[in-house]
Length: 441
Image (cartoon, rainbow, N blue to C red; front, side):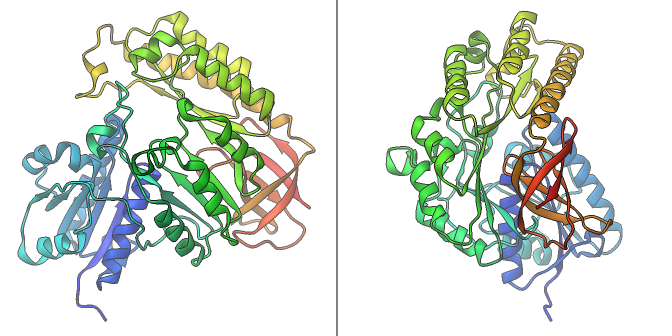
């Protein structure tokens, strides 16, 4: 039995952060630490934070303060890691005494840092230069049949509203052989669905090989027999070319699903956002998708209330949605972030206007999604089983165009027992604007 302290873990933010947390947990376990599922029973609590938006920073601070309450009982050290420390580490060191140690987004020394914090009582901020991307052992925190692979970190796009390049640094791809190595390691644990994630997967390989190599990566991963589905998050519209679309459409293992974060469709707003797209290039892409790749369902995101966004520019988003009938869409009120170019722009819109625009677009998309789901009635789709409900022979699962946690689910009605992670063919029998119902064939 290990004499090392036990560790409770809380991971916040995106699935790229989740991967970081899974690597940290694996390193701590392999060095003799025990991981407690309930932080209340842990000697040390680690909170891996997000700092992307004001709301995520508030969630991170609230969680840190919540976890600090356990220091009145068994917990003796609270360690904070991740984006919040990378961006605001000096402030946290001064004004957040509840945190006993602060670590940025380079956590390669996490084992030594935890030991030093616990045994030597050293309160310090650890910010290290970014290392090259490599495959690392992980302890999965997802369901056992799917996992995320972070194929790149950082970003070179420098959108005028975004802090990611300042937190995570410039774009760094993981070498193809390392991605394949990690995929093989995950399939040995029972994973059959691989979700490739980066701030921009369509840029993959450009920094290493002098050209984009996402399609060759998909082809290499498709050779692994255990992999059933490969999903892509997130594809910037500027680098979506015919080669990628052909690979998604024709490769049986690649999900017919693309998450394309457009953020806007008005050329002037896109230019102010420092996006490389324009209204014409976006509509050209979606015309091509509709004409030649109707089997690929699209998810996107839009920012409402960017500085100087007029009513007419905002309404262009609604017109775009009505025309192209996207499968799933997320809408976000513009968040004014210090350190970004948009922070100092004139004509910052009131929160009331931004929230109103978000609400109106969600209402519009709800009707579009209902129409899209209704068109699936009577059709047969392949689905994966994610969980069993309390009702016998009723399960929850997902289709290829439903990413975990963000795109709804399908209720599976089966006349025979099913296994978690099993792939089944389903006839769609009912729906609402978000979820589906189907009978297992």
